[in-house]
Image (cartoon, rainbow, N blue to C red; front, side):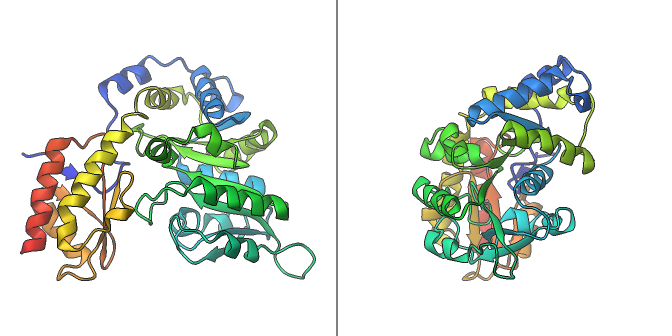
Length: 343
């Protein structure tokens, strides 16, 4: 049977043989007691990469985001983010349900955030309204097709936050891709944010895990929040070892995913379904509004031919390249998808 070409997400990767070996040989302890040496090493490594004092290993990216938000936004106070941000669209209302956090959004603009507009939305104390306590951004931005938010924009938001005396959070699930695409050092990103969440199980190919990054004081509190949310793990070094291996071996190779995504995009652009200017990392958004196909139909036809595509909406599809997609898989995906658009 021909192996499926799975372009639905970069979360579908399998651990490499070398990663499995690292996991099998990991030194472990009880992480709830902070005694797992491999987890501790992973946390130190990630904190240093982003120029922060500390980090905390969490089982999922959603949990890492929600821990971070609870660190900087008290209950019944406000978070600002864009209308398609992962923290308010794909985390099942966790900020409100778990953290008691009110959220307000600016219109979705991908990486083209209007800093003045966001600054104008910040509510101070004392006006009988919910005060704003933090701004969150997503780097890279999933629903914007993996767009990289530029440093000038991020610095502008940081200045607005500092002026208002509020915090900044980065949902950095794919920040590794931004680092590779623009060459911005991770520590430069880290310097702009009070908290970050960074994911090991998307582009980096680990089977599980994200980290919350921040000050030592914040991460000490984060450990309690993680336990309250059910995220305290025991011999988690087996999982952390996969993350250490990914950080040591899989960051630079993300450039290969970017090249393959670009090949996909350029091959499909003649069908009027791709905006090439938006394809800078490993995501390709398919706009089917001007075609005879809707996204579920395209996904079904492609599946019949061994290619898996994500249908994000009635007329929106998504392709994501990753560790398990090689050049032959891209060739096959191009043939299948091009045939679907020609039919």
